[in-house]
Image (cartoon, helix red, strand yellow):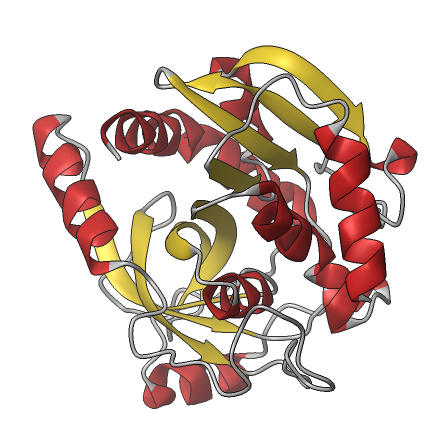
Length: 269
C-alpha cells in the first residue's frame, strides 16, 4: 500500500503547478465550491495512478489545483464511499497521498440527515466530533507510516478552526449549528428507529462519509475541519421519504453560504 501511495504522490508532484498545504473534499451537492477556485489544473481521477473513480451522481471525479481565498489549494471534486464497494484503504487512499504531498490542513464537507430536533433543512453544522458506526476502521491492518499505531482522537476536529468558523459565521451573518456527526456504511437512508437510536447516542447528524477520511488525516497529523449541510430530517414527526435528488437539491441551495465560510476560513488559516 505504501509503495502505491508514494508512486501516486510522485506522479502528481511531477504535474502539480504548486505545492499547496490545504486540501478540500467536496461532497454531495457541494462541488460548486469549485467555481470559486481560480483553477490552474484539473486532473480526472481516471488518469491518476492507483486512484479509485467516483461512481456517485453529483460527484465530478477530478482533482483540482488552484487558488481559493488567495491560497494554493488542492480539492477533491467527488469522494469515494465504502458503499460503492471500495475497501476502507481505497476510500482513504487520497488522504495518504495528500500527506505525501505536504498537506497540513484538510477541509471536509458532506450532506447529512439531522437528528437534532432544533435543526432545519438547509442548516449548516460545524462538526465538533464524530461517531464511527462504519463496519471497519480505516487503520485496521498493518500500520502505515508516519502515523502511530494508536492515534489519539480527542480532538479530531481542530478547535482553533472551529472557533474561526464561528467568528466568520457571525461576521457574515450566517447561522451555524454545532454538533456530532455519525457515519454509517450506507447506502440506505436511515429508518425512523435508527434515527432515534443515533440521536440517543448523541449524534446530531448522520451521513455516509467523512469519518474514515478524518481518521486517516489525523493519523497522518493533518488537522481537520468539517461542515455538514442538513439535507433531510430524522426527527419524530418530520421524517419523510427522501431521494438522492432531494439531498442534492437541499445541498445546492445551502452551498453559497457554505462556500463563503470555507473560502474565508482558508483565507485566514
